[in-house]
Image 1 (cartoon, rainbow, N blue to C red):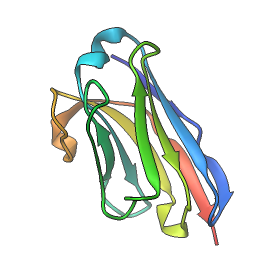
Image 2 (image 1 turned 45 degrees about the vertical axis):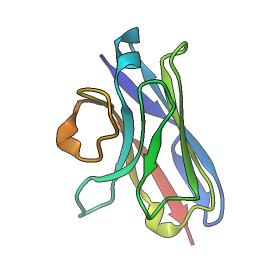
Image 3 (image 1 turned 45 degrees about the horizontal axis):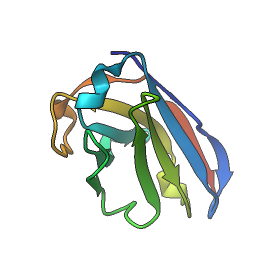
Image 4 (image 1 turned 90 degrees about the vertical axis):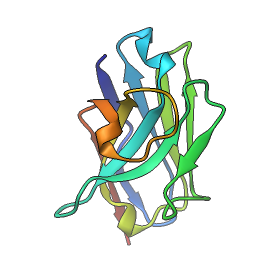
Length: 123
């Protein structure tokens, strides 16, 4: 499975961006999909995860209420709608496919990673 994230860019604080992740084949529809981010000098951290059928989601406390993860298995895509962006949301955002179902929040639970897309939020 290959993953390609897109939609990053420069936005002012309070603005919105929508990230998309396209998978190369339909195998990913059986697995949870997650978004992670990595700011300069920091470790990669969990942002959001969605179950294989889209019925369950989980978010990091720092983004809860502002970000929404969704997926369309017919189109092999996962999206991250980011609203009310803050400067501290600045990071490279990665989509990833989990090894199995469930709602994993650790990087070790994911075995396929996209190349990342940069989100910069100016104050």
